[in-house]
Image (cartoon, rainbow, N blue to C red; front, top):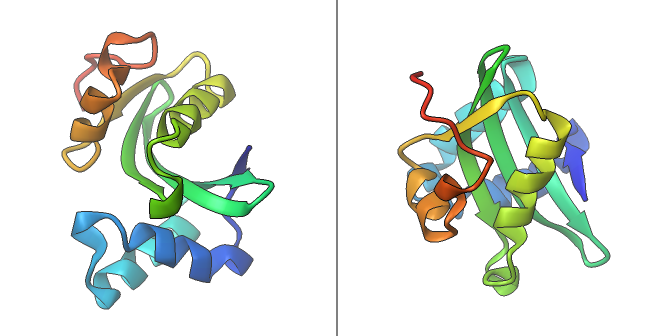
Length: 126
């Protein structure tokens, strides 16, 4: 289940974000979390299952019709089970009239999961 980020989830969110290649540095990680906490155009969602929070997806609302996916991260022990794809599909259900595009950090994941060919993505320019 997709859940909006709250400050009480800070440590788990930072842990999950640290799996992203461009978020390895602690200072960079803190800047990223701060941006999600303070900038309303940046939203972070957590994926919660019976086992707890096991994934996250971070987005930027480019405009009213376009959302860019900046971060997708799943706990390594839960990878390979389609959780990343489910997070993207759940986000699409929250914003059904919006187009989604990956950024340079999430494009490879979206291509690997064949999400680019589904109804989720748009070729809209950023």
